[in-house]
Length: 207
Image (cartoon, rainbow, N blue to C red; front, side, top):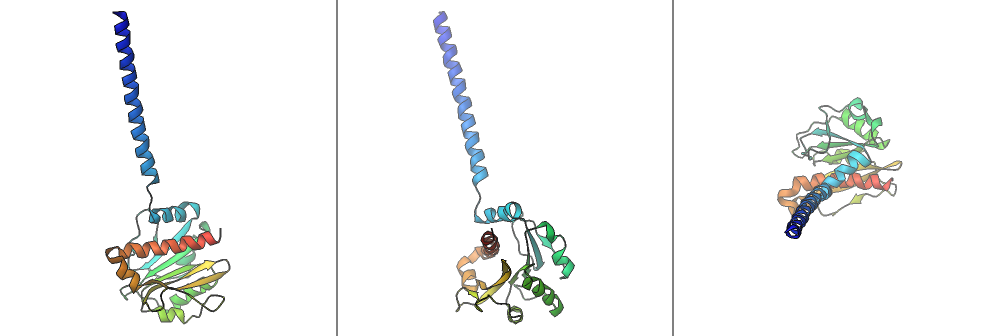
């Protein structure tokens, strides 16, 4: 009788241990799944906010980055607005969204931007078409007098200047009408991702 009771207790104990181990295993799997589930967009944000702190400044129409990305929104372009607090970051990036053609940038404001770009104190992304010729007229080009061009037959919808060492690299056709058409309903997020991956690329080239 005692042996049967002891056997039942042992079975019950082993059953309880098995249940606890199963619960722990399921919890661990869930935690690991949640902690590692980052897409390219989230991984880029992690790098720009932790590994290589980058200040993102937004001017013009809303871009709509994910909430995880801290963005400093400014209502006017001044030297102070673009440089205040920049010493706390490895890189400062200005993104001007003029995709609807309604964002106002005066010649003085553009001079401020391009002077900071030329001195490698600012990365500059311009989304839109109406001011591309004016921006290109500043004549900042890569050392070989060339440009990074993607699809020469495609219409450029965005361009950029990114610091690489002691020079600003000019990127023409960062985003094109072909890219937008191919992205369909995901065009806005894919453009955001393209910007973040470009910044990440030039950070990695310097480290």
